[in-house]
Length: 287
Image 1 (cartoon, rainbow, N blue to C red):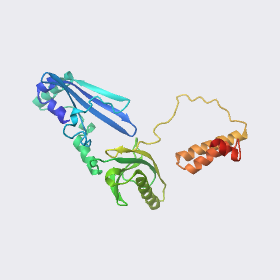
Image 2: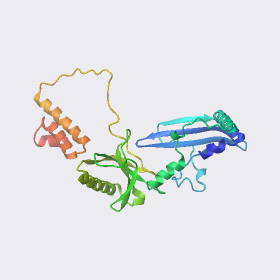
Image 3: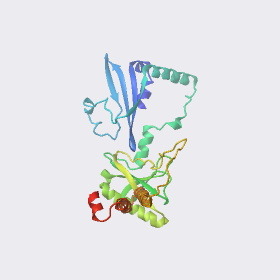
Image 4: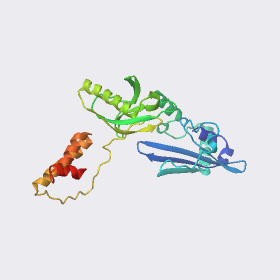
């Protein structure tokens, strides 16, 4: 934002600019953003890229010499390129608005400054070299309505509320809290056990990922569904009683997998094989 503000201050700055490229790479559970200025200075073309303040290795002196401005972080990236003419027209509107004392017709609630994001992340405990583990939670226990940082078992972690896009989730800074992913899962499960006892409701720790420099919520598991505008179904119920039992065991296995009850999942799928071959032969076949 500071670079764009400086760009709009002087006409010569807009004339020196060739383009501004804004990129977003969709990564499971997170988004990677990239901004790159291409401009002319001293008769040659130069490039300047946005680097997050959390990327400490890139903010060191001399790091820009070997920095690859065109490196992509994902195999699929969306890009928006704004030309010199775009900023010239924008500067004219800004200058006219200032001259006439009229504000730009913009709903600023759509935008969040970097300072606001940094303050939010600082409140959630983000530090240099942070490496957050983010795990989803399926529960009906009492939960805070806003992202909240708490201390439990001598460690700090963050609770994210459920939204239309995200599930309840827990995040912890593995690096600065000095814990492994396995130790963090144990801590989370003990925290959920206490909540379950207090509210007499279930609380299941789900899957997630680690590596984010800031804590992020976990997307909901039940967003995507398979539907058809015209649902055509032409199957009939099998006459084989054994096959019907196999289908029942198979469905129970999938249900147990969804509830993360591994023992019930394995037992249900084992019963499907056992309907065909009983005794040690089925065990040998599975092995």
